[in-house]
Length: 405
Image 1 (cartoon, rainbow, N blue to C red):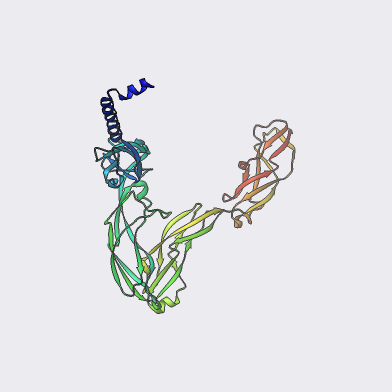
Image 2 (cartoon, rainbow, N blue to C red):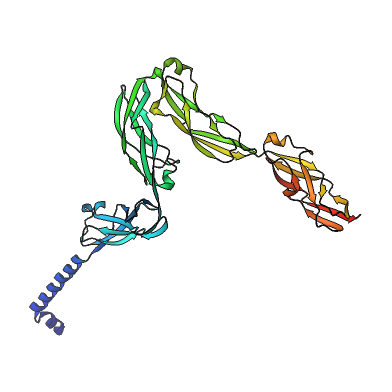
């Protein structure tokens, strides 16, 4: 016990000083250790060093990062402190997997990790084309009032971007939200471009980026909201029918001459040619408006979507086999079965016209020999109208007994 007391009391000034120094050193080391935290915002990816005339599309638009620094105060850090980029030097058109780099403008902040660290990049030819501007109205005018007409300046803009994207762009949209207006007004409006599914397309540029929209407001007595009647012309490929149609927009509001508007029950499109069509189709169709009648939002055309389905109609016909190309020294003694059932599918009109005169089952016996021959029935043994499709045979085999003459 005495030795332990002597240990703590002997040279206690030096020992206390050493303890204080150790504590100060520990706090100093702890204070200077860096922390790693997740940055709460997304960092947009930028492409650099891409060749002239090309444009890039990435599956990822942003990255998330973790950062390392001493005494991090996230309230003083924003997206502007970082830059995410992909270097596309010397790359031509094609698809590539490229690493993403993120740099920090603050030398005291280091990038600890990047998610994702790489992404798929598709490089395409950059193209441009002119498209019309369409107004998309939302909200409502004052009670008793509506939009009778509108004007857009300029009525057409240029869009540019990846060839695969631009090829499907048909218009630029100027959104206008009504908020109780009862008089004409004009507004400068930013333009947007959307995909067929309604998603905004961000991989393209629009020039000019905004347009001047003038809206004419009139009393409701002079406007009317009507459905779209799709006018189809021509005949589908035989064996197909249109199972569904739709238009975008589904309705339009028209304004103008009161007498003409009162007679309208719908707005009809100009004829849409469906001659020979056998698959789904989306097409732009102009509206057929009477003189003195205009549409709200200057809607001059609509997107028509046609769903084309194959006819499910079938018909069964009983056929007696005929034999061709039998060697001259042989003859058919018998065959079983004596008749074969064949099921065809096609348009009802064509199916109703088939009979034993225009449908034949011709069995090719070239290469056969004396005895019993088992022959598998195939569609190339049939002669039938080209607009029909044979589905099956019952039975699917024919037994032919061939003998010497």
